[in-house]
Image (cartoon, rainbow, N blue to C red):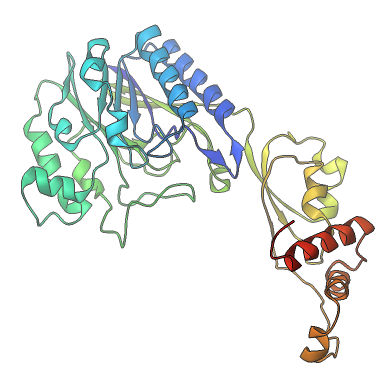
Length: 377
């Protein structure tokens, strides 16, 4: 059989304040087209459909449209689980009648032990769970950590294997030996919550979610699909996409997705970044993380850069910040007796090597007046 493996849609996510709705819709349309072009037998979504447990109404409407398009319009079976960002209860709403259209959404641990039976494949849908859930299910208080809980869970699933079928697992966890990025909420503390990769042996394929890079894990029978959209600067060099999974024999084919706006890192001095010969070949509406090589103060640096690169998501210095502030020789008492505007003017001149503009002086006086009135305008 042939499946499409995707995960970590994180509907509702923002990138340093920038709305990603258009990016996520654009990625979804590509995923849908790949599924149709490849004539897949189903779409596997390995958790974190939402970015938070209480998604906004707009996010709910957005995800509902995506799932309805795949399942009701395109007539594609969906095999999905809840991740650590999802609310299992909210995501499970409506699941009793979803199966009539071959839409399987598993959000509870016990559902993992009722595999979806296809003609030549068994699909085990194991949603994200806490060790306490395993303690209750197995009536075993010794299952204190995730790696411990996975042992009886996997053993029980394997006891249900039909020897005449392929066995696929969809799950959402950190597998030991995987590489992470900044945008992923950690599921491990001191390594105790990592699932040993050896426990995944016996499954023909394990479709994983949680880590956002497709190269986070290279096991013979297990992969993270990665997220379809870049959610942090640490993902700038990742290629986003989905896997097409053929089960007989096992074959994985990565299908890349193209973003509307990419995430890029630029490390240069300010003069170079402001030179049109440098940026004329860049896609200037991309999301940029900028690291300045300059150490000297640059007045209004963010505003000046945003005139060229409007979607800056971070700005820092490669080698620190040099202020060259000199000791004035004044005592603390003398400084405390100075007019606040004089202090501000002196400080600004030391840092920016320039005088305050008339507009800056006006803003500063208004701010001081509000502060003197206890914050009342």
